[in-house]
Amino acid sequence: MEMTEKIEETAREIGARVKPQIEEARKRIESLNTSAVAYIKENPGKCLVGAVAVGYLIGKLASRRG
Amino acid sequence: METRSDNPPNGRAPGGDATKKLGKKMEKVGQTAETVWERTRDSVSDIGTSLDIKGRVHRNPYGTVAAAIGIGYVLGGGLFTPLTSRIVRFGVRIGLRLAVLPLLKQEMAELIETIEDEDGKSKGQGTKANVKRTRGDEP
Image (cartoon, rainbow over all chains, first blue to last red):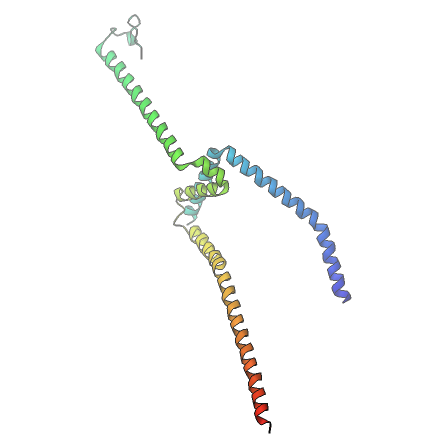
């Protein structure tokens, strides 16, 4: 019983320590996502042309390797 | 294109037929280029309006970018490559898992339920039979 209690306590401590970091990372990812979406919406032409170019390069590399 | 009569090109005689013809041809070429440019611009704008690229990007930005990457990939000649086959295999595996696992879970749950029901019925019948037997044994 003592062992399980100890394990539970350490798990709780680790959770309490990691929770703010996870929250911060989540917020960062959310802000990155919103900024990326905003940029794509503001510059659709640039983004699409860039994406086609990236895809073209990947396709070229894949065909060379194949 | 303008030609000056007082300043002949290359020291030749001014107002020659060749110069006039050249000027007319140049004008024609200019007009043709202008019409071609206008038509190209119109067709590009028509394609843009028919595809509704801006609307698509607004509705689903990541999906549109992914589609553009896919188009580029195909244009780059990556369609019939081992990488494509690998990606397709991976996608099929994930899709099958996502599609089949819930079905399997449902089937298993139904099977367990039916087994439990049958068990309950057989137990009930067993107890009834026991009761009858005990009653029948009674003198």
